[in-house]
Amino acid sequence: MDAISPDHAAGPDWDAIDLLAARRVAAGAGTTHAAGLVITAQAAGCALALVRDEATGWLVVVVTNTSSGATFVPTVIDPSEETRMLGSVAPAHGVGPRLHYALAKAKSVGGIRVRVTGGQWTTCNVERSEWAAICLAQDDFFAILHVELLDDDAWDRLV
Image 1 (cartoon, rainbow, N blue to C red):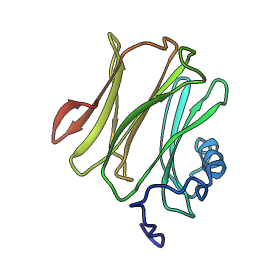
Image 2 (cartoon, helix red, strand yellow):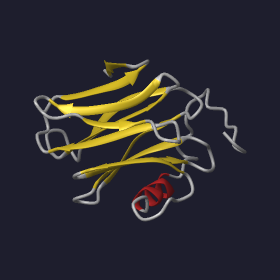
Image 3 (cartoon, rainbow, N blue to C red):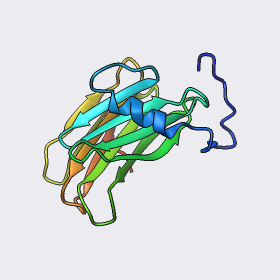
Image 4 (tube, rainbow, N blue to C red):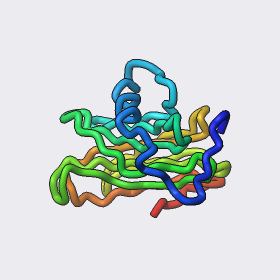
């Protein structure tokens, strides 16, 4: 990390991370490349943004329901570590749409793909940022999601 070298060994200091600023950066991701924006992904009904918190250096995951405008911040990521992550967010358990997301950053990872059972794969390659990111909105709250990483030239399921 450039000028920021936080000690992430103890985990994130949630009070120091500006989650509102991360949400603002994510909201403007479609119209401008804002400072701190690492990578974005969009699909029908959802958007994903990975935003660097300037004060702490942590990367904030922001998932947005593009239909309602609701935003979720499910986690933060240590930028110095390899990452293979998937998750989902929703307004409440059993209430859709459920927004699924996956992120990966590792030297061996070349891409990421996602689908629901019986659906077609949506694929994303690693970008200049060295990250791959993908999101998917599902009205069927209980649909089974399949996520795979292109890891060392073979597709492996991300669990």
